[in-house]
Image 1 (cartoon, rainbow, N blue to C red):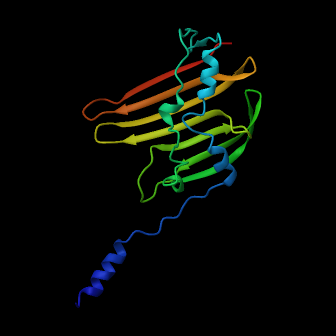
Image 2: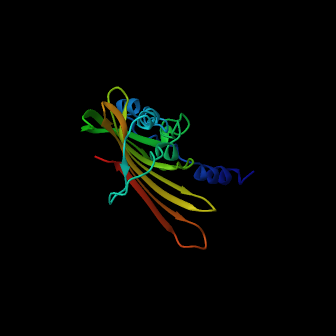
Image 3: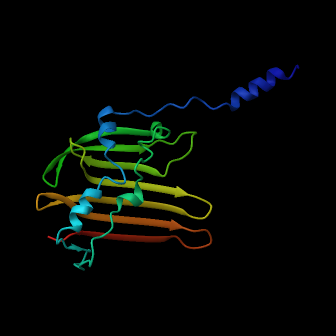
Length: 194
């Protein structure tokens, strides 16, 4: 019983400090609700019905419509929107811009590490119109596991063709590191031919 005081003191020292949530901008949160893996499904559907040409750097023409890169990076409910994880992200409005002839607001969601679980989406910057159309995105994702580590980045945007939003460009870079082997860097990019 005489050690109970020391035991309580030790337990108090080991207890986690309260977790403070990073700041959230309500306008950024509203616009970030449009930043999901399925945000560009309509643009890809529109593009598949039109005679658009896409090319790689250097002028190599692609035979088919490139796949939509967003679902590979973001789920339909990414962690910065998920009720259980959104408090681990700082959200901000960065300013206004014009992309593809449309006014848009630049917003960001940045993961802030704390004692809770980690999140694979480290940062997102996006340009979103007032009506909720995602025009441009820059996503950084990191994942560490026993099997491999991955560090990926997606930069992509829409364009306007025949008065409709269509895929404009995408740049994907990935670094994978598997134990007992060298890290591999992969990248791909394409754009709408003009």
